[in-house]
Amino acid sequence: MEVNIGKSVLSLVIGDITEESTDAIVNAANERLAGGAGVDGAIHRAGGPAIMAECRKIGGCPTGQAVITTGGNLKAKHVIHTVGPIYRGGARNEAALLRSAHVESLKLASAKGLKSVAFPAISTGVYGYPLEEAARIALTAAIDYLHEHSDIELIRFVLFDGRAYEVFSTELKGLL
Image 1: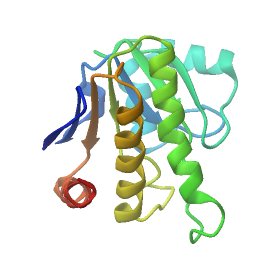
Image 2 (image 1 turned 180 degrees about the vertical axis):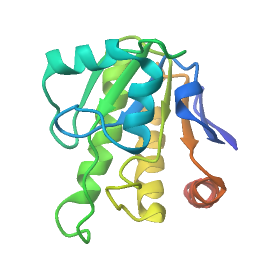
Image 3 (image 1 turned 90 degrees about the horizontal axis):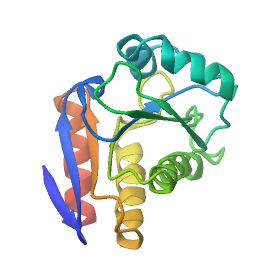
């Protein structure tokens, strides 16, 4: 699914984010930037040791913030590491932190002059964020950002399966 937001494109696909050739892919990282399970582990495995070497130099990243490294062996030249919140029922500022993770990733992409960014469904795996709410927050953050910043030409959400795609697609249709 693809929609135009101003001069930019917002796209939803099912796929493997490590195969994306966008300027940057976003990693759903942990605060220690230590690699891990899910998307984080897949990106580190596919990208090779250069990514971890830069992560060690950076040292860490607070929840809701973002840092950038090389893409190593990936098709994407950069990896933007952002830390989404662990879902604990929704009363601990999780929504604001998840929105911030998306917005800070996009701000970093803009600051580096990047034109295309691919996101996974941040915090929806081992961090337990409900998929419908996470999709709404992520898509709203992306749409709002594109309305205010025309420098990013493409934001793609690379979703891991048909269910995630359907949830994001339904949420996107409801936001337009």
